[in-house]
Structures are given as structure tokens and as C-alpha cells.
Length: 173
Ligand code: A8S
Image (cartoon, rainbow, N blue to C red; front, side, top):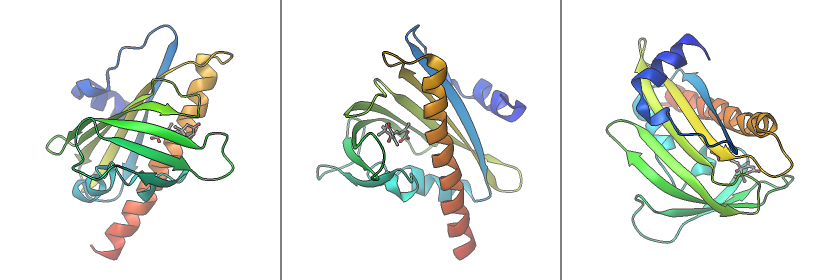
């Protein structure tokens, strides 16, 4: 782990998840050249993950206020082995810029996935995104394989988030 993310982890207890023997987890960090408020405005939209997650084609929610316990029904892009995921909002903290969700259903192999994403402003007006997760290791896989698979998706999402928000920052500085 790089020094920057170690410091952020020490400062942020939200990224310390207990990991059981049949689980694995990891933390990924991305620096974004866009203001924190702009990045937060994108990641806080629990019902619109496809705004930056490129493996997601659409998302549906029951009408009503979004809050802790809200469920989103996520549909992946064609070509992936998994087609759906059901995800629950666990925490949305607009003051500390923390969003947490759990995966509670779907036709994929990421059982009990729990994710925490936090934002921090750094000098120069850039934003550091830290995203950690814990997930069950599926039968027939190792923890290492599960983390490689999951990190690939998370890193793609974080790079895409950088791309989307940096373009937004350029369009309306
Ligand atoms: C997220 C993180 C992940 C999403 C994974 C890891 C997923 O949407 C994809 C493939 C799967 O096999 C599982 O923040 C699932 O969305 C792209 C459908 C959940």
C-alpha cells in the first residue's frame, strides 16, 4: 500500500473492516484532479451507479427517499457472467463524505460484499478517493483470485470516476 493511502487509513476508521477466514478484502486509492464537492455529487447518487461504473448498464429503485436501507437493483452490461446485483445503502454521510453499501443478492459470486468509499481533499484542490471492501471467497476460488477479480472491477470504476469528474470539472470550472 502506498504511503498516502496508509495515512488515510490511519485517519479513517471506516476502512477497517473485520475480515473472517473465508473472506478477503482490499483497499484501492485514486487521486482525481477535480474538487471534492464535484466528486461527492457523483458518488453520493446511490440510485445512479452507472454515472461512472462502466460495467453497469442500468439501475432501478423503488420510488421514495434514498436513505440507509434503500435497495438498488443493478443490471450489468452484456458480456459479463453476472447480470444482476441487489445492493443496500448502509451509510451516506454528506459531512464526512462516506458512502457504504452491501451486496444482498444477485446472480454473481460476490457474496456478502461490503464496500466503503471515502473522499479527502488534498493540497492543490484535488480529491483522493479510498475504496475498501470485504467479500466472501466463493467455493472453488482462493482469496487471492477473488481479490484480483474484485480489484480489477473496483480500479476500473475508480479510473472511470476520475475520467467522468475531471471532464465535468473542465466543462464547468
Ligand atoms: C461495485 C463493485 C463491484 C461490482 C461487481 C465489485 C459487479 O457489479 C460486477 C461483476 C460481478 O461479477 C459482480 O462497486 C457484480 O459495483 C461488475 C455484478 C456485483
